[in-house]
Image 1: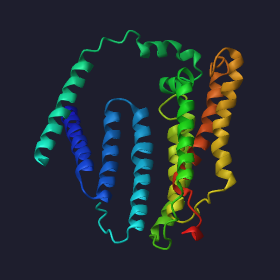
Image 2: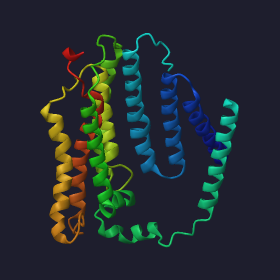
Image 3: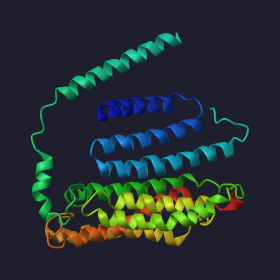
Image 4: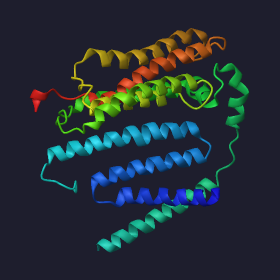
Length: 87
Length: 218
């Protein structure tokens, strides 16, 4: 059961990492990055490293994700004609 | 042409990955069992959680420089020019209510994380991140106004925690080394440093969001 979960987690991590890099829309990439961070938090928790899991959830996924969202909003404000955030 | 380049890049990356894999598998086993060393010295560190013992005592210098790096990042942001404040009036009506409910709990969680750092997962960085997230939430709910660039309070708070760390490190120089705590006072000193760092880091992280250029500069 736990092996199946770990395999699923590893696959989801690789998939979300790939989608984060491959998606052409910046806004979607940021959301995928946050998803990736939360999955990574789970991975750290599974590896019995709760300290790193806490730091990843709070700083990696939370604050960095919010900063990136902020940056995307600032970019959109600078280029109002750019609806989808495509570069 | 493009396909050729792409396949060449993929082949080069695969080669690099294979080389790295071979190198990692060929590494000799570590000559020092660091986990055992930490466990053996844990009693003298002043805290009972090994991660906190490493971060604040055995490798306190690293943590010290990490805090300095965050301050330098903030200086870089100040030097590069601040973004204008986001447009107001577009917020959801639920957000202020949620923020008012969640922020006291977040402050409570941050204090718990700081206090728990001595004996279980937690510590200054995590507590500071939760506090900063609370500030960002208040900011997004338009309860907390953005900070103008020359506001004195955040600067004092950011510098204060770092200077407290620096002062303790410098005071311990007389003891024979930077951040070599006397074992009988180590616990107290670590709590003192972590409390200062929590305030400094929380304001520092929040400043990444809340420092905004004044409205009329747009």
